[in-house]
Length: 228
Image (tube, rainbow, N blue to C red):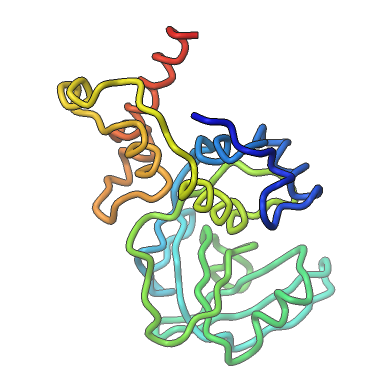
C-alpha cells in the first residue's frame, strides 16, 4: 500500500488526538484500515425492559421518567427509563454535565449495556446512551467495537476508520482465482466486511473469528510473514 501522510496531518486530527492514536500504533491511514474490530455489539434489535436478562447485554428504549444526582453511598447519576413493560435503572459513577442533560426527564433514549440485578431492580451501569425519536429506525448490521485507549471514543475511531477506508488502496497478494478456490474473499473485501459486516453476517462466526473475512486476514498475515 502506498504510504500516506502521518496522522498529525489529517484533517481534524490535532497533536492530542494523534498522540492517542499513536498509543494504538496508528500513525497513518493504512494503520486505521488495519485496526480491526475486537468484537461486535448487536444494536439491530430492541429488547423490552421486562425481557432483559441479567448477565447479558441488551438494547432497550424508553422515556426517562426520573434523573438525579445521588450523593450516597457515593456521588453518582441515577436515572430511570420506562417502556411499556417496565422500568430500568441506569447509573453512572463518573459522569459529565452533558450526560445529565442527555438524561433529562421526558427524553426518549436507547440504552445499550449489560443488565444486572440491583438494589432497586434491574439496572445498567455506565450504559451507552443515544437520544432518539419515537419510531426511529435501528442499524441494519452489527456495530464494531475497536481496541482503544483513554480519551479515544468508539465514535471517533469509527469516523476516522471510515474516512481511511474511502481513501486507502488495499493491494491484493493473492490472485482472484486462488481466493475463489479457497472460498475466501479478496483482501480489500475482507477488511471492509469486518469494519462493516453485512446485515446477514453470522455473529458467532465474527466473534470466534471463523468468518471467511477473518480467515482471509489470517491468510494475509501468513503471506506477509513468508514474503518479509
